[in-house]
Length: 214
Image (tube, rainbow, N blue to C red; front, side, top):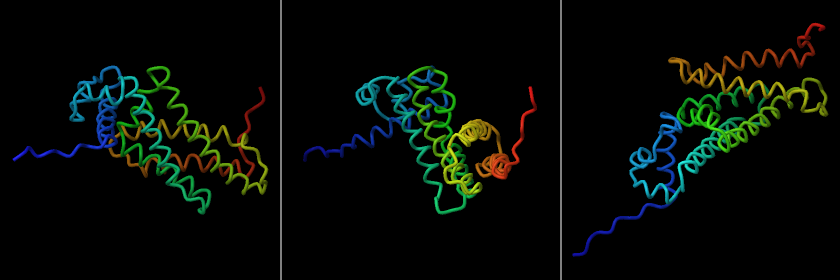
């Protein structure tokens, strides 16, 4: 009787296992300290196979950044329903952001800490993701502002800085929430929503703070 042949694992499944192992290793140990041996062992494959599929440590790290960035953007966009009021859209977007970063702490560590501290091209990959998030948040805020001011032609530059600040605050708050025991994604979202919506409300009513004369 001949030997029983084992079913060969599809390449996509094998790559996903490798990326899962790499995200966990890079996220917990850092880019410099992580080794391809560790990643291969965690993925249950040989190190030569990792190199065969993903070429080098740099290429593997870049693939991790791209996958985690795409997943985060998809989660935020998917969490917002355009038929809802502006405040609910922003709330749902923030909730999706903090839920995703809490559920994928290793991926968030790669995006927020590792990729930004090891130079190009890693930082550029994260910058691209951030630009996409800022553009999406700008759309949400702009729609609310145009409705409040009854001005469909209100330029995006009126809210662009606010969107940039909101995304930056969300990034910092996600890092704090993941490092602080007992802080839920909902609590983090509520903290930023209360802060942001009060400012948005003032801006939409035309009662924003004016800096003193120099």
